[in-house]
Image (cartoon, rainbow, N blue to C red; front, top):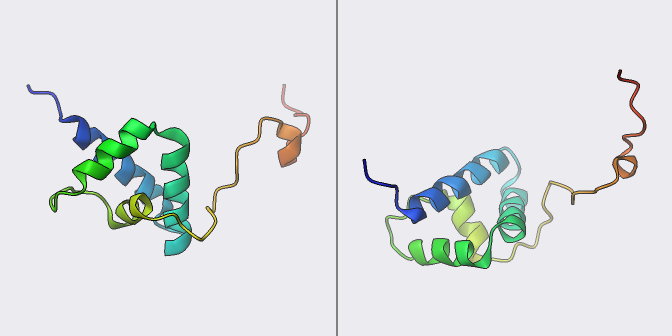
Length: 96
């Protein structure tokens, strides 16, 4: 069995992110995908995917492709992560 091409994995990952954001309005979805990819992917991963997408047969979800090509004007629908649960209103638990 041959190993999958590295670009296939990047396309699959980007498409999974796009699937997550698909239920949001398009501008927010693109912003969310862009934010996720720029926050959690290395520059090399992003560059490899952009290079791969120069081919017409890239298989990338249109929302993810847009998120790679532009800097969105909309805000991501997902808030920035916080490390302190109290900042999210998640005070002391009554569990256990």
